[in-house]
Image 1: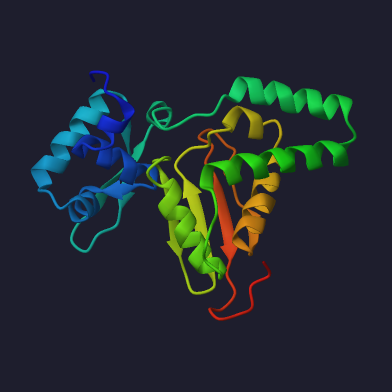
Image 2: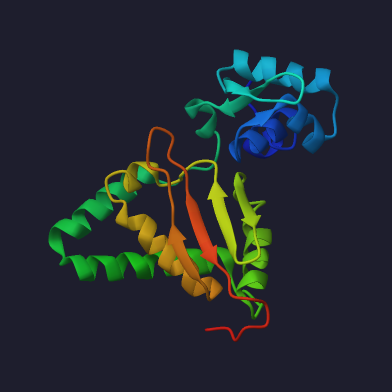
Amino acid sequence: MAQEDEGDLFATTRGKVLLLLCRGPRTVNELMAELGVTDNAVRAQLVNLQDAGLVRQLGLRPGVRKPHVEYELTPRARRLFPQAYEHVLRNLVDVLQEVLPAEQAARLLSEVARRVLGGWVGELRGTEPRHRLAELFQKVRSAAPGISVRDAPDQATVQCCGCPLASVTVSHPEVCGVLAEVLGDLLGADVRERCDRTEVPRCCFEVNLPPEGSPSPL
């Protein structure tokens, strides 16, 4: 597949297929419904993406009349999504934990995360956690393709198709906890990390949302 600018890629149908698969496996019918294109158009994109080593068949999902093939991204495809400067950060975390007491290193990492996230997101004007989460998602989704929010009455799940800090969190899983704490402070909610640190690392945070109208802890 020819090289494309990352922003141009995600504006194409091929890029939109990648974004949808980034959020989880999909069948041809699901991709058709979400993209608003024909069966043939979806299948043509999937063939091209499979030939490029970016998409693979996951398995069969039971259907009403017959099973449907599910497709997912390959690890190579996930590297198309924004990556942090992992090598430098991993070594920095290594050094911090070697030379500082554990509590002091954790406080330092937390402060760094607050400054980075605060500088990136800016001020959130909502007063309730659910509104602040919606505002946060609006701010980050264009700058960080692959982030999605699954909302429910009392809990939301923030996911990313990959992990921008994968090489760090595999050896330092506590970094995920630091990020959950900082995100919780930003939203005014209890946030728990549920990240996947296996072969294809993915960020996942559960946000426990109080009922609307409840006093904000902020």
